[in-house]
Image (cartoon, rainbow, N blue to C red):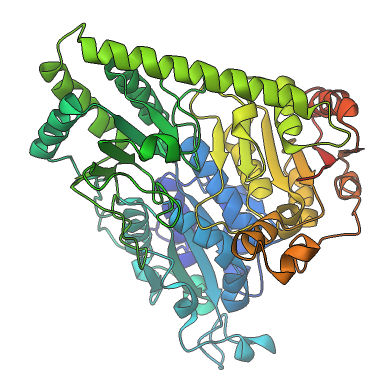
Length: 571
C-alpha cells in the first residue's frame, strides 16, 4: 500500500481493516480488550477520512459475536470478521465456533495477543494482565476447530495474510479460520510499496465425476424403492429448488432428518416427513444428501442389499473422527450442481410417462397427504390440553408469522406443525449442538436482512446459554428488532431424554430423569428483554397463546422493538 509524500504510512491495523473491506467483509464484530487500541484508532481515522472499512459492531460477549457472524453468513452467503481479546476472549468463542465449524461457516476469527515486548516499543506491555495472558500456543485451544491459523509477524504482510485467511475460509468445505494479532505489530507502520495486491481467485467446490453421476442415474432408474435422506440440502436455496424438481419429476421420496435448512417445501408431494425408519428399512437405494447422520445405526438400518450413495461438498465428513455409514458411491459436489446433472442424466434413461414412476408418485403423494392430515389432527388436539405443548406453540407460531419470515430454531420447534414452503427462511442449530446460538444468530440474520421479520426459537436452557443480557443489549444498541420465543419447560430436555433413553428402567427414571436436568424454579425471562427497552410476555394457558404472539409480532413490526414471549410449557 503506497502513501503520498509527507503522509505517515498506514498502520498494520488500518491496512487490516481496509483489506477486509476490499475482500467483501461487511461487519467487524468486536468484543474488545487492551489489545484493541490500534484497531480503535484505525476505525476512528477511517471515520474521519471516509475510508472504506467494515462496519464495527460491538457485542458484549464473544460467543454472541461469533453467532452473529454465523447468522449474517447463513442469510447473505458472505463471510464476516470477529475480533476478541487475546486468549481469554478466544476461549469464550469456542462453543459457537464449534457450531460454525460443523456447519461449514467461513468466519474470520481474530484475537489480539499479549504484547511481545516489555520495553519501550509502541504498544509494549503496560498493563498487569499482559504477562499472565500470554500463552505458549494461543491458537492451540482451537486448532482442531479451525481450518487455518496464523500469527501476524510483520506489518508488511497484512494484505497477504488477509487474502490467505479468506482463501482458506471460503475454500470448500468452508469453515472458520483464526488469526492472532500482536499489539505492537498492529500499531507499526506498513512500509510503502508499489507492489499491487496479489490476485486471489475464489477456490471452487469440486465438480462431480460424470461417471459417478451416470452410475447413480442408472441405479435410480432401476430402483423400486429409492429414498433420499437429507439434512442440509437447502444450505443454498438453489439446492432445495433442485431437490424439489428432481423428487417431483422422478417420484423420489424424501425424508428431511434433523434438517438445518428447508430442504424441501412442506407441501411437496414427495415430502415424507422427518423420520427415516419406515422407508429406510425397505429401501433398495438410499441417497444421503448433505447429511452427516442419516440414521441411527443402533436403532435402524437399510437392508444389507441396498445401495448407499453419499452426496455433498464433504460427503464423508472428513473432520469427524469416526463415521461408519456404508457407502457404495460418493459424489463430491455442491447440491445444486450434483442434482442438476443428475436430473439431466435421468431424463436420458427414464422415458416420459414411465409407469413405474407414475405409480410411485401416486403412492408417495397419498402417503404425504396422510401424514399431513395426521399432523393437523395432532396439532388441534394439542390445543385442547390443560397445559401448553410444543406442538401447540409450533402451530400457533406458524399462524402468527408471515411466510417470508426468517426463523432460527434451536431445537424445540415441531416441524410437523410448522410447515414452510420457501427456501432460505429456516435455519436450525449446527449438528455440534452448542447451545446459546439461535438468539445471537437471529440478530446476525436481521443485520443481513433488515427488511425481513426474524424470529429466534429456543428452549429455556438455550436461552440461558445465549448470554441473554448481552444479546438484548446488542438488539437495542444496533436497532435489531427480532422476536424471541422461549419454550420454557424448566428442563434441559436433551439431558432428560438421554438419561431415559439409557436408563428407562433405572433408578434415575423414578424421578422422571429430572436429576441434573431441572431448571426450576421458573424464571421470569420476559423481564430481561424489558430491561433493554423491549416487550416481554409470559403465557401459561393454551388459549392465551395466539393473542400473545400476535401482540409480540405487532411490537416488532410496528414499534420496531425487540420482543420475547416466555411460554411455560410441558414436554
